[in-house]
Image 1 (spheres, rainbow, N blue to C red):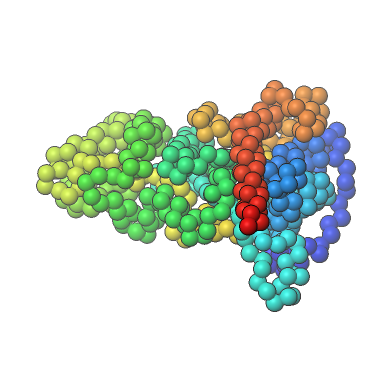
Image 2 (cartoon, one colour; image 1 turned 90 degrees about the vertical axis):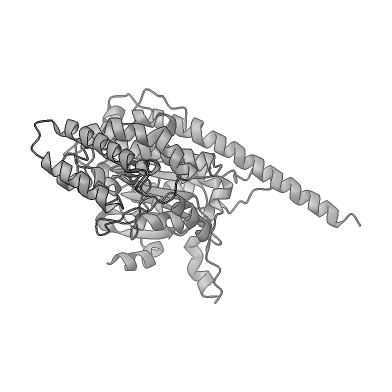
Amino acid sequence: MTREETENRGEDMVIDVPQTTNPKTKIENPDEFNVHYLRIYYGNMFPYTDIHKWLSYGHDGKHPGCDEYYFGRREFSFTLENDVYLRYKSFKNASAMEDAIKGSFPYKIDIGAVYSVDPDKRHAYAQTGTNVFTPVERELVFDIDITDYDDVRYCCSGADVCSRCWPLMTVAIKVIDTSLREDFGFKHILWVFSGRRGVHCWVCDAKARRLTNEQRSAVAEYFRVYKGNENNARKVALMGHSLHPFLARSYGDFLQKFFERDLQATQSIFSSKEKYEKILEMISDEDIQSELREKWENSARSSLSEEDISRTRWEQLKSTLQSKKQKSAFSLMNLKIPVLLSFNLVSNVPGSNAAEVSKQMNHLLKAPFCVHPKTGRVCVPIDPNNCDEFDPLAVPTLPQLIEEINSGGSKMDVDDDVSERNLLGRSIKFFRSSFLEPLLKSCKEEIESSYNTKIEKSKDSFSW
């Protein structure tokens, strides 16, 4: 069955699977991702209540101003074994969501928009001839992948990631998180490890969830410094005598230090012709290009290390721009550009599907705390205030979690208090205390305020 056929027939499919979730089950090849591990994980460790509370945004039925159908209009998708893909799934409550996940142990869970009607009943509404099935709310999301940095990443390729290139993700988190808070005023932002080679950002403020597609596109474009790809000689055009405040702050607070200290040491981006040509192509002044190219080609047989060669050429670039600034439109102020242009700050590369995730409400994104089927790693939250300490290679895997249960080191019910001493407990506690609790407090205040306003308007209408 094709992906499209499965998508259309998903709500009619029944998957017959064993229901056992005994964590003591003996599993062959314990170091590999295994469907039996998913049974155990989703049967005992997945934080269903926390996910339901998050995606309900205070609509828990305890206040007269709540929308009791809010959560039930949220789209979920499941990717099952053999790439069976089910879209437009919806659940009335946390128990229904839990039963569905435990009944099919999906390889991947994606979260979509809140629709105007229940996604599971969309066909019934379509038969009425009215186009009422439309997304009405969606978190503003960003999908950032390490491969978007391949122009300056030479230690790894493809889906591989290591301690030398992961800091590119770290600096992206710092830059984007700071801008979302300071430039846009958002407060409730969740960063999540994708499970393999990237990070996901969920902006959950009410005003973010209600942005139109056009407004989402505008926010995404705000971050797009990178303008092109390997086929374009000019990758960025930042003209003028000063940088935008967002770029100036990013450079001063994060990028300059990272570029000169970390990126030079780990990637040596000026050490070879293949590498430095990418930088030279960004300089619009051809005389400066030629001068530096000649100088670097003549010193190609230097006995210095790659790191030292790269640092020397960076200093030469700065010195050349300084000496030419009176004669060239490429001024010393624009010296910052090679730094900024060495990064694709977010993954909105032209033609990339990741761009549409940010710009369109109807796209889906992998749920926090689900498991990446290629690595077996859990998609845990990342603290943006301490993201330097995050190690993607230390994220718990399913085999590790199940071994911890077997050894008696982990509680079985994550809806109770969890211990920071177990592998997943710290991530769940961070999700609750640093993200979920402040978010729900804000949501309940908004529901109360909206309800009171509605009551006052109702009183006014009868005041005559």
